[in-house]
Length: 297
Image 1 (cartoon, one colour):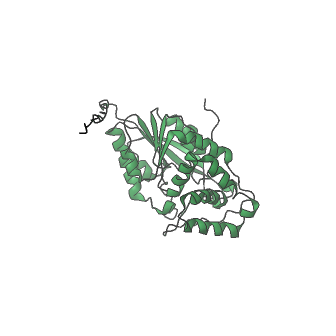
Image 2 (spheres, helix red, strand yellow):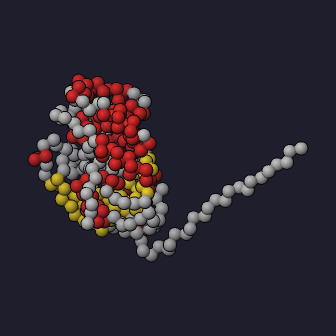
Image 3 (cartoon, helix red, strand yellow):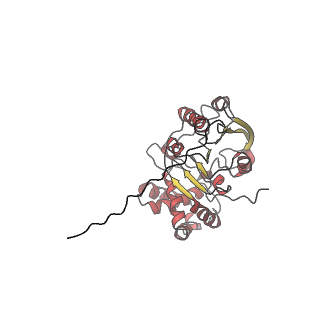
């Protein structure tokens, strides 16, 4: 029986909080969970691996995670000052959004990223082609400051390494005994529904194909299990033809009105490791050079 679920401290469009039971049921055991698209980290927060490699292509997200891991008290104290009535208005939001886009101070960007996430529209994270954060003001009555969730995330993050790399490079870091869970930008439901401006990077059809190819190689040639979430479409069914597919129905849309959100068909595709692969060879440890002394005359 699963314990109480832990919420992420960030609002996140497409977050996996509601699906963690389904995902956990499909995830095999392993010594490390690798997430090439960690997002808000709901799966990370609700699994129990010894180690984690958590990656995202968004440098602002990873920057915030690393600061929260190393100095949670400072981050929580400084971020809380922006969660007041005086900061919850359109004029202040757009002024701080401009400061965020203009500053190169990584710590200040981390604090403002949390503010923008909680005060912006519906947990969206979107950038212009020039790399500027451009989510509009959310008009919430009283944005919640997630102090408890941040403390829990920081505690859990001591078991994690955060990276900001293309997903292909993250796959290359996986080893036998690891498990990979992928929550990529979803394949669009229609030609007009594509959302590809996350982190000023695109994740189009070519990336969807590449992810499927890497998953097949990881499981079949390297013995590493891979689980992927995505929309249930003819495209994804074709891409994941080699996987064991489970169907899901999820209530999700980019809408502030929860009553108007209709169920969408999603799937979990599990690429099981090839059972015929030989066991991995033990990795040779590099010998340390012998310590030499020199006799001075």
